[in-house]
Image 1 (cartoon, one colour):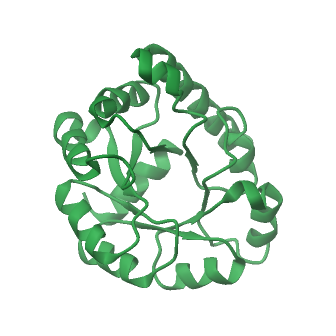
Image 2 (image 1 turned 90 degrees about the vertical axis):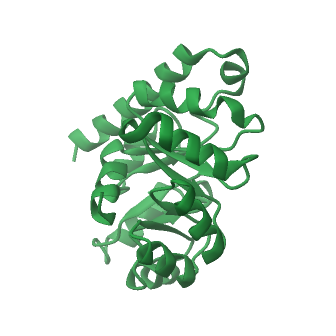
Image 3 (image 1 turned 180 degrees about the vertical axis):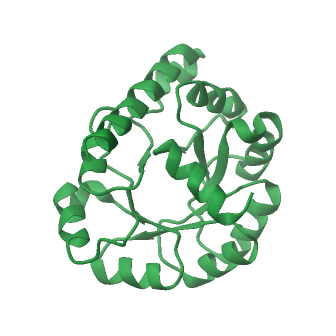
Length: 216
């Protein structure tokens, strides 16, 4: 897939599952459960134990059923290692041009973390495929509307403050997709291996996104 096709696949999902797990052995099954509910973009953060091995396992075992990426990336070297392992997009909590440049050299999208309008525009002009507004719960939906009014070309994705049922509100505020962590990844359900509950959560989230898109 080309970089633009990968980006389209992520944005079509409408939601990126931000996975931080202490027990990474269950991550492949978790990704399957989320994909069954319609959330097919899975971001495995570098704070997950054996993150690169897990990314490789998800990529090999699930193939095109999910679009697996890497999160919490802070430098070009980690970008290289993650893409070599099978990551198809790179997410960072910060804006560093080396991450964008290395991602593009390797043919994958870069989703760069930003907080201010100036930083968001600078990242976009540096080539960021999508800007991850982080932490979005500090800024809120009004921030999205305010920034997009004079700069409607920006592609913004909130991470932080997104729930299973308010995702559509973020979309209505201008988000092209949402990043969701703890609200989606019920720790008790994961511990119990209750994959049906996680699939139901994913379905609720995806429906919220679709409702938001339908109202635009």
